[in-house]
Amino acid sequence: MISQSGLTFFGLTSEYRVSLFSQIHEIVFYGKGGYDYNTVYNMPIWLRMFTFKKINEHYQREKEEYDKAKNKSSNKQTIIGEDGKVNIPSHMEKSKTSYNVGASKK
Image 1 (cartoon, helix red, strand yellow):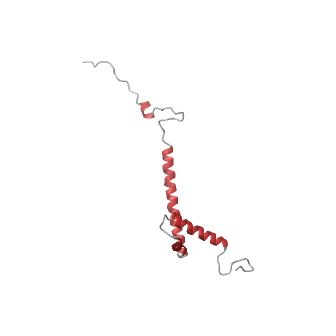
Image 2 (cartoon, helix red, strand yellow):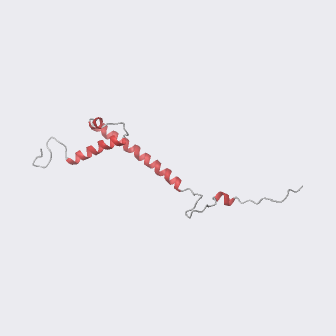
Image 3 (cartoon, one colour):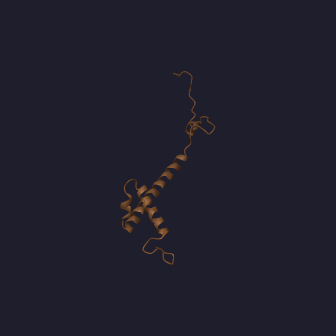
């Protein structure tokens, strides 16, 4: 039932319902089987908000660690260049040593 002011009477607004069901879905989905729909739906609001916040923080940390590892690996040089040729590693270029090929002198 909708009142003359446009608000639902004894019910949730459509925006709040979408927000609520999205939050429940994300807790169930990203909780990786730790929560079922009925448990999350019947949680006290403060506990549902706390759970949602903790799951969100976990995935934010995971993303930061992934980005950090990705940036570390992108700074490495590869032996095979973009043209498909094998590049000499920089540590081998610098250590060119000359060896005495002749017989040893006594």
